[in-house]
Amino acid sequence: MTEVDTGVLASEIRVVVGQLLRRLREQAHNSDLTHSQTSVLLRLERDGATTATELARAEGIRPQSMAKTIQALEEAGLIGGAPDPGDGRKTLLSLTDAAREQFSTGRRAKEDWLVKQLDATLSPPELRQLADCLELIRRLAQ
Image (tube, rainbow, N blue to C red; front, top):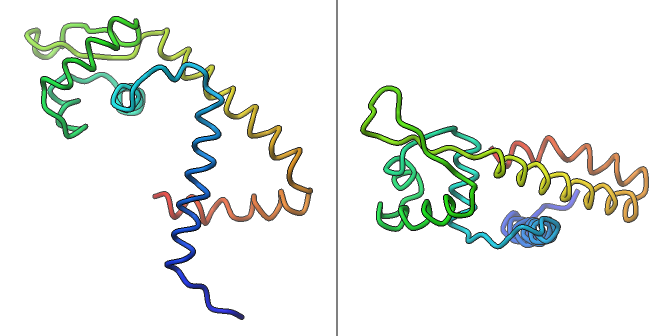
């Protein structure tokens, strides 16, 4: 068995995964959002409601920069605020139903595209081979 150069493998994985991610992003046509805005939306979706201060800390940016991002997302109707039940002086930010619908629609578009690509590009044995690799990819991603 031939030894694998893990440096070369790492580089190739990075490039290929990047290409796949770009193709998937192309399928969601609502990508007028900046990287920062998308990151905030994904964090709110994953972690739930939180304050602007906590978002800024989690994203590693200044509160002033986060305020601009929040303002743009509020104006777009993607996030809203409500008083913190534990401390009424704070506002908890969360996704709106419109944002949740955009995420759902975007994910469906991406998955539909990927299903079509899998069916059109890979043979049944190749599909099985790819399925067998998923656990390894999952472990790398953790």
